[in-house]
Length: 601
Image (cartoon, rainbow, N blue to C red; front, side, top):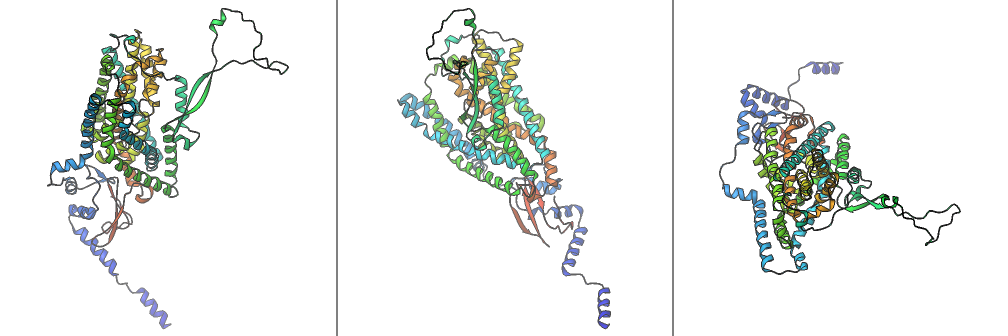
């Protein structure tokens, strides 16, 4: 009884506060006693946070809330001191060395062409270092597209990814249609083919055999490859073969002899005999980028919806993307040397420079259209929507544009485009990883403009008048065909045949412009890459609200695969775990000021 009474008395007695509780209460009291602005600065405690990868821009929101004024000025203030020239060289050494390589390549090519008499086999060996660069860039395309698409889509909600994809596709088709209209206006105004005849221009190469209907159906077939592994190195295509009529088996099951006695009676109907064709499917070399993108989008949405179960796959592809980008950095060191021999070897291999004089007006029409589209139209769209300096954005993409100009392949330029968009222009990785691979496949502004100009130029050479209906057909067909143009060198020639066939022009006349296509292909590829880059900026601006909402509501280390590295730092009273996520700060565990279990700023 005495023990029970003592226990009851002990239970009713007030407990002494623990040292930890007393410490926390003192911390809260001190925080409440501070002024509001000082309390806000203590709440963010910028001095103890790990430095971000890039300083936040003025007015940038961090996880749903803006920084206080003093803290924002402190974060946005540039570092003083140091040599600006040295810093510029350190940040742009690759771009400067690439420009120097282009100048040296042109000089080397002209010098070897004039003073060195190389045989065809010597020319082949001379351009070998450039061939190595092309092979390395093509090698990295496949893992880069797969990893970036899957991680980019998995980081977004299904509804958000659908909105971003729709905005990207609408932007790409809108700019492509504008490019086609611009090309048609220029070629109808300048009329480069009126003063010439088709007989005056030397033909080169052969005409690809392409059917418009079959090409469009092949585009849809390649969106759904029957073998995913085969799609990594082959594309499906169909071609028509003439059916040879054979002798049929008679009623008794016997086959006639090889040389039966037949009487040939000439009739008038034999002259109009129609030929029967059959469609034969086959595979051609080349990555089926469209099929891989469709699969990666679906796969990314599925593992994103799986939550924690799909996190293992998200982490795997995120690590694969990081490893791929590090390999790209290694390739960048070799790029100036490869570009030097690539451009010099191309100058040496050109045999007839007279063709440039004959097609000079046609080339001027195409180049002026590409210049207007890339210098005026695309920056104007970016300025209207994003309200930022478009030319500063384009300067950030200078390395990617120069690479596209030299290697004339938007897909092979994709690794450099990723690097410039994310590191120079600071575009959200969730946008670049989703939008850039799609843009490299379907956004072909320069190709569409070139096809529209070339089709009407060939019509002018043949003295054929195109009415409004055929011009509209040219514009629609050029827009659709540019989507199906693979991001490889000179793929526009195949789609060019589709445009010519759609308006009844002779498809064999495509050989008239093959001689200068290698040069124009480089400039239109550069315009394609610039359109892809501006598309990321436009889509990021239009999707700003969705991205900020995801930053506020998502769990940092579970749903967001782009959390870089968690760092543990010592504060005044407790330890808080902080991580830098896409330009925004997130704080886990406990906050000594707000006393909440999980606080995110």
